[in-house]
Length: 121
Image (cartoon, rainbow, N blue to C red; front, side, top):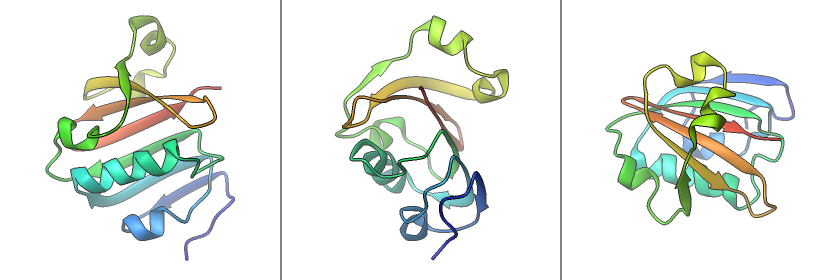
């Protein structure tokens, strides 16, 4: 099992291991497929990754429609994007809001080979 309850975690682990972590900032360098990225987001929506503030996950064969399949989402407004660090926006071609079961909102940015997530306070 990966280290959990830490501030920043950088890993090259598969989906099963990622689902067991609880850190503030997660960077995962092992490529997930679009369906695995969907499972990752669904896990957060259902209450997992409670302490997560940001995530960067490499995606292989990225398909936005598969990543967001079955997930209620809305386009992110320009004002919300203006409040994010510039580095978050680099390379992103899709920006969506998703909502956790407890009402928290996250902005999900999807690029050609990555998914970046920023949880709003």
